[in-house]
Length: 356
Image: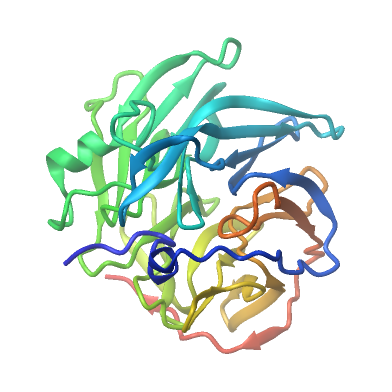
């Protein structure tokens, strides 16, 4: 069965792009004027890095449903703790197709090395569908991991060959890459004397749940979030919790279109991208929630296409909004005051299922 890619569904077929940007509540804006902001990363010095998928370009490329436009408009923006903003990386490949923007998806840092994740664009643009290591001083590429090549040769879920790298993390000296296209999580050891250097499959799912993000749990394990496939029924998304050995510990259900997950001081946060209606994705229906043992607590609602999560040096929860399907240059990062916890549970969640 053909896989459903993150965001690219009926809305893309209809060619719809929202002309108005929905309200983001009274939450303070940290950064604005962004182009399709996706995952966020806060470095040890307090600097915020924002992966921007860009605005496509002038070159006709092949999209999921037909012709699309591509070009080197994807970037990574850095905002230092003092507020100084600069373009950290530029000229990265971007693809625009019927309102959806795809390009740079995530950035992280491990032992001084930056790891940049590049998502879908066009196969004849080599710097796509890949994870690259960057020297922290020169920003030159020191390692290149061909994620599409791994999918083409291994095809873990046995469906059509497709790759859509959407998130990256280093946990226990292992590089994890979430691939929504192959419905899998890849991994590769970063230890100097690793027994393997190619990507291997850490997890794969054959029921098209569309994994979207991975986050460390603070004790050696990690969480993986899922969007679920079309028609994105409300309450059908989930988060799975794994231990350090990759054994499933629990599954948290009752969520909707989850695109990012973050564990902060024992509290699990998730971003719900939007509700899906008769005409496609609906603006101002996105949320940030806290997943508690008692259910789901709403941290912020009425958001327009929120995506990445991070915590800044001041303890505020940051979230990128207007991540896709909004006019050019309307992307933002806003700040949520998470306080000392104690969110009121707004709706029940399914009881976590114990993994086997």
